[in-house]
Image (cartoon, rainbow, N blue to C red; front, side, top):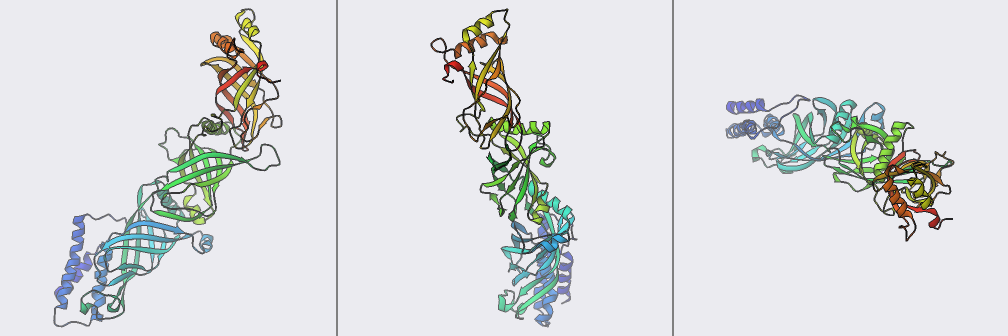
Length: 543
């Protein structure tokens, strides 16, 4: 008996222990073998003990050998998390009132244990949670079945109460941005072993007591590796602007963007409900060494997810976020916003940053507020009449022979002052107010002139309804034709001359600055209007 007791004592002294919050390292195969050796000695000692003629009653020996036996098994196994489901609890406001946050967790786990022989269950416990050595909350767990050992899959359920929000924000950032990270769990709990009438498979003399045996004071200390979302890989759909009813002209428009998210993390996020998101320009683009949260440029829009929003693992379905353009009335901000619209109108992707402003759920608001995700807004598709021009046609009031004679006469100068009407289109789904336009006229890559529409007030602005095509301005506007590139200008005049002398039409590009108002914002749209047709007014059929 003395030898067997020594074996049990050796086994008890060899069980690894971990202090609360202390990180744990994975064991190599060799170190695992060394750690399992005391357990083998324990089992051998137990066998020697029961081969002796004088045995104490089974009820006396169960606790003596049970606790180190169970503690050894609990200490040695590695717990691996498949996924964690977060769900809204029935009530969270009592915790919120005192600065704590609460949510229900359901954790799918798998592990490989030494065989208990009996059916084992981890008792309910208050499990302390640590992130990189700092405690952030408690998981009030419910009983977790472990079976009889071997390879098992099971679930650990409970309620997470966060009482250190600062540390919780750190782990939330790890969930959003990192590839993987580690969380430590520590508790002292009870393990329940079920006896003969519940399927005990130990030796008969170790299962003589029916019912169950509860072994208290077992240390449960584990490090679990969790996968992060690596930025969630946000994919955005096309930007849509939709007019809202307004009592004043050029009011706000609804902005709508479809999005899709890939979530490779260990977390399923249920009951997110309504998320508020601020969309910024990316101030560090094209260099993205700085984190997204440190690269916020100009706020471009404020949007929300729909109520009841949730996010599972893997690739999500497309979902809509809606809100409003939100641009401060400062020149720098207007220019940056115009860059977004210019990229959009010229079918180029725009780098943006989605910053979480909050959530209707306090738990998720505390976790996610301030998290920033990079994404690209795709450019407008060329399904609007083949292009996204605002200026589509120009009708010049000009006598070609007189103009050519003036350009070739050194006494009359090198500039022609004429007038033209323009046909405008609206590539947006919301009303576009054109309040002014300046454009450099290019023909075959050469500068040949300048067009200028005067600055107009909002009441005087040219109003283009959604998707308007070819609206002809009622007034004529000045155009200057410059002979700095005389051959190109003469070729332009030849092409717009009526047939058979010319082609009757020419195509020019306009490097345009369009002062506009759309969706409640007043951007200056600076982008090239490509292949604008130019004709002589008197041969166009216009009055």
